Length: 271
Image: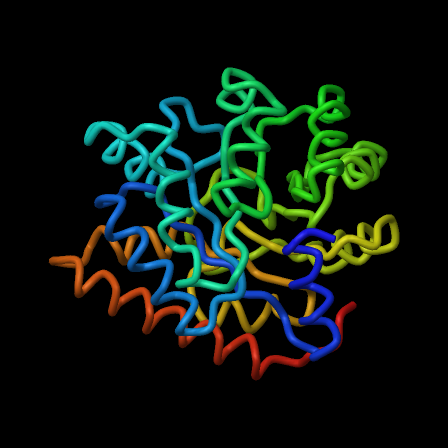
């Protein structure tokens, strides 16, 4: 059982939902990213997604795209996310997962990437551009290593394909709440609940919703639908808007605390 599997088992036994903030590695720098991850856990985050900057992001909106570019402009290298995770050993207990392009994994080597990431302290990887037709080998490697392979399902993914994606995934399924790119939104699709309800009948994996969660109100509306919520652009924006590192840490901690309160006080029944 991977650390992600254990997390969701523990949360379900406690009747709680996962809160998963996303941070871009190296924005504004790696030391700040590490500080923010620690602050997020202390504020109530259950799992952290570490975005690996990439020059050709797949589904990221302007806020996250800009954060990737800032990190790359400062000289980001893949080894830095490994070093950062190792530096957090004993400082954070929540699982860390990388959000990483399949192109990067393929370039490193599938088995090598998984082995290096696990040795550094990562519990899994979210791979947004992995085609289900090409997922079997990476899925097998991840299963052998107890390393979660999280894949995305979108509102426009045909249902037969959604089921195939679920079969080759582990840890949890990342359900994209809206058609399009990441970003904060005030309204979400009317058919979101029905779509997640159907998907829940196809898999035993936890289903976590991301894209479009702008704050506590959105989180409270979605909490009853999901096993967990993923918040990216709203977090990354607060970090970028902060005047210094201390302010960035404070803003993230306050935002995570507000999200945690909203999720914990929403109705608890899954659909």
